[in-house]
Length: 58
Ligand SMILES: [Zn+2]
Image (cartoon, rainbow, N blue to C red):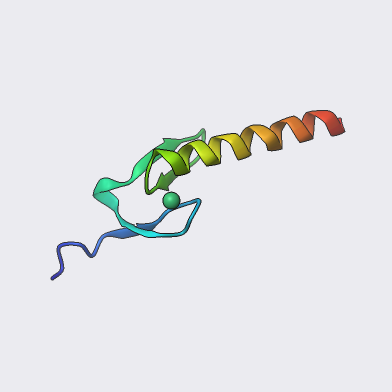
């Protein structure tokens, strides 16, 4: 049973998923893994919010 050994944690919900089925998001210096597109969308929204907050603070 070593077939599914290669598992990673979803960046949003921390669920362990097989790397082969993970959704990837590539940034400038990183690659993030998500269990599905819902989690990736969630992360994208969070990222946008962060950016907006930073801009407001400036
Ligand atoms: Zn997830």
